[in-house]
Image (cartoon, rainbow, N blue to C red; front, side):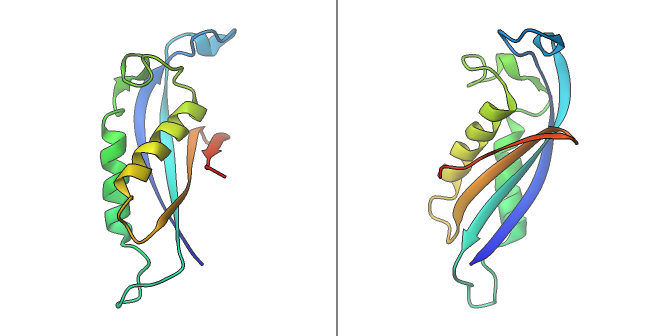
Length: 123
């Protein structure tokens, strides 16, 4: 099994609704997002999937969040813009984008700081 991953980042503000603490106030992060995919096969030139293409897809998915107030950006205008919800939202978008790809999406990990991260997987 081949396991591939790429990372990108986006900068955004958010406030956690219903949170009791300083994160209930509007603040910003450089969110780092890692997408993980797997494949059991290689193509005729020895690639499971082109890193450049995977990074392009991820960058496109993240572009709608970059330099926004997430609380005003769908779907986070309806659900809390927690790192957990960001990871699941990116996962769901990447799953659609990769539906015809020769790889299987295995997880999305989101860091909101160098010390704090969450990973979403369907298993």
